[in-house]
Length: 306
Image (cartoon, rainbow, N blue to C red; front, side, top):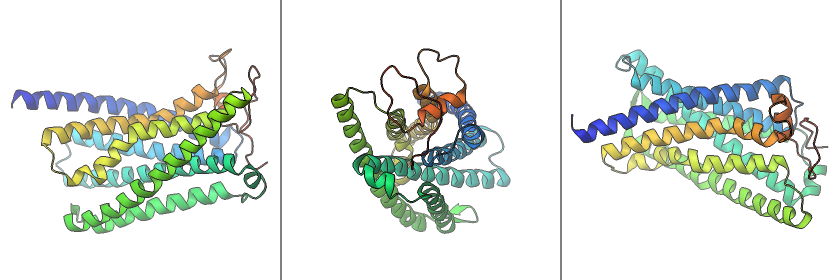
């Protein structure tokens, strides 16, 4: 084995180990968010989005950790392990698509609430968040089913069919969801910044959570999507492609693990950060009400439709 391959292998196993640790910590954090939003924090429409996003992140991290374990373990050559690996890859793709669409829906709905506050408060459908989440899960499941149907035949990919399926997914994910997320987040950032300067009031914690989550996703999870839908069809040197794959996996694992940290950091009070319960911090982070400087807010996730 050449020294170059030795260095590439060392980097691959090192980054894979970091990705595995990140996946385990991220699953623990998202599990905590799921449990708190299910039993400890009062549910609101926005909390429904966050709950579904935490489920998508947990599934993504679980499938990523399973794939990394199979790749670095001795059992991948077995046919059963190959089938499990292919199944985990499908689940990872499904969770990635669901997480992207949910984050796009979150930023878009917050943008509409800022641009059209009267309509948002008075004319918003009562169960809009639940319906949107269900529709996005169904869309992600349909896309994953089509990919499995066209691309997997007896666990061997058909290159011609996969090419056209991936091109459709490229147009949908990178051509529709991504621009909507970027546009709505940019508008939200401008309006929040403008209101902060004019009223000299800190921005709502909820807006900070959304903007931070979108920023982390764009910087950490987008490279994996670029690899899936673009670089797969570009002829790159094997060493370069391997390094990009492992780095994009680590960054995407970091992105799915970062949201619980964002919630708890944004929702904590500086005066007694180490003394508060997790449900208090989470409820405060998802509170959709203005917070004057120097005043503590109760840790309840209020109803956005009130």
